[in-house]
Length: 287
Image 1 (cartoon, rainbow, N blue to C red):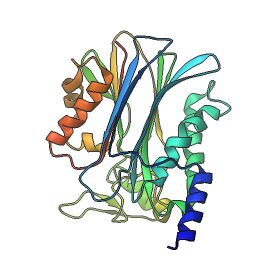
Image 2: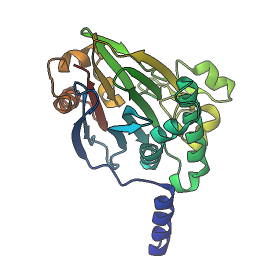
Image 3: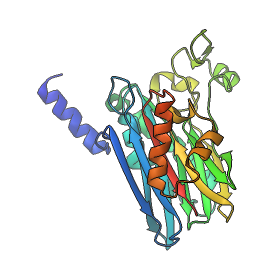
């Protein structure tokens, strides 16, 4: 590509709202102003692959309509980082902008995921052939948690020391019938994980225009109340879940009161267990 071509592409991406690349290692923390016992921390680490970091996240509190919202999300890109970057900048705000967010949260979240995917596909010339998984969590006034996901990034909550998964791993083998109904197939080659059309290891994702006829972008949505039994929430990309069970992850950080330190420790545990993927993790502590 010529210098002029790169400049034009950069301007197109800037206009579309793409962020800058996530650094190889990034960490941070924050706390709720309304519910001071709620804190959050995050950590990201570049994996062993040769490509640039493809994980992005959102971890922040904001006020809207006299309500405090905790906004948390992890986007695990594949075949490039642009889709994940776009999601970082747009998905959560798109959810909040839905006209029925405060009256029918589940419908608002599902519609937003589908609308966002349509916008990504419309910009396929800029984004290329890549895609991204997503797990999002919106904490409303420290009392209600709205979790949604597509792909294999996961949300796990700890209640009285017990791990409870609040997301669904959208594995091709679990959705084989629906994939085949759309005209696709699921490969099952010895020594490899099942893949949609022999390519993608998840059955649901944003983007992936070349596979979209055989993929879904409809999320699973879980809405739970936060009470005195709720200790903390973990959002993490599959780099952790490939090497740790939900309960192992909960047990490894339950005694770490600082949310940022907990997120960092969880990633270090995964790396020590030979995880080679990019890894991103958010911990939200309620006590």
